[in-house]
Image 1 (cartoon, rainbow, N blue to C red):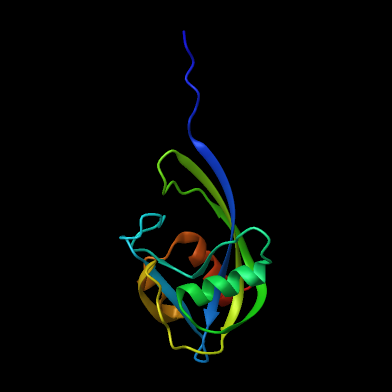
Image 2: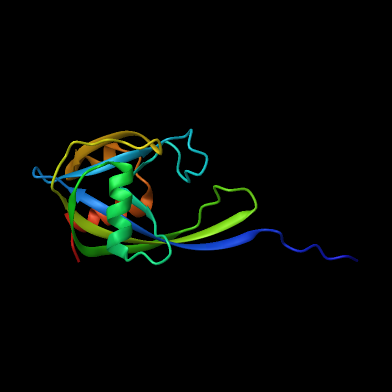
Length: 148
């Protein structure tokens, strides 16, 4: 009997994400574009951020992702939540992503979306249940509403 090798590539990433709050205490949500081939949650709502590049600090990574995805300036605060998820957006690859979610205060609110996302919304904390938010992002948002 010939054993077949598992050709699945396993990859581990660190993602830095921001729960961005404006002057009205609304949270910035962005909706994943289903036309982007490596979105792991098409059409769901998320917070801003993404995978860290080699040799970046978490803050550098997060500021880069915020500028790329929504084009605003923020003040990054403390980490508020850590989670992991295991999407499979690429054939023959298994991913594990460790997400570190930070509180961030918006210095500007003039959003310019990247092609990775199709929509954005500034959302009051008491209305987040009206949005189909990725679970890990929703848990991070709830840390703003109910800190431990």
